[in-house]
Amino acid sequence: MDYVIDSTTDKINSTGGIALVGKIIEGIGFGNNSKLKHPAVLKSIVGLFSQGRTSFEEMDLVREDTFFRDSLNLAYVPAKETVRLYLVKMTPYKDKINTEVDNSVIRLLKSTTLTPIEIEDRKYIPVDIDTSPMDNSKSHKEGVSRTYKQFDVFHPIFSL
Image 1 (cartoon, rainbow, N blue to C red):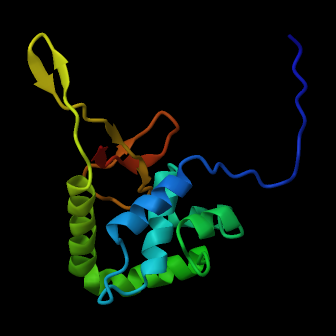
Image 2: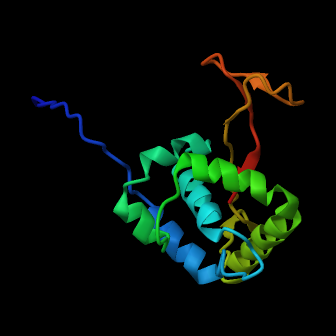
């Protein structure tokens, strides 16, 4: 079989899964807490993370993506500079944000039916665990290690 490969200068964004992420966010009410400041910024970051992106700097990749914006029910997708500014402004409210994230995860888990897998008369719940490399070059944080791509990263563990 012959393949024809074309090149383009157009932006190509992967939309796989972002509509589902938006429905989950809507279903669990993430960001609907009126005490939570700047929910659009938080939803945008969740959208980036769900696409495997690890830095607010990558917000420019989805800034003009109407599918991203509409899927997350955002009036606008904030610029990377806005995200950085509001993340700094939200630092004093990190406990409220952590509580909102924790409560959202609990609401999500309560709305889900976990189906065990039975193997040899034993029941198991599958758990998907992975790390997400976060660039920490020049941060001097503990737990930062070098990747094969020669970046200093911190790898928080996520599970589903």
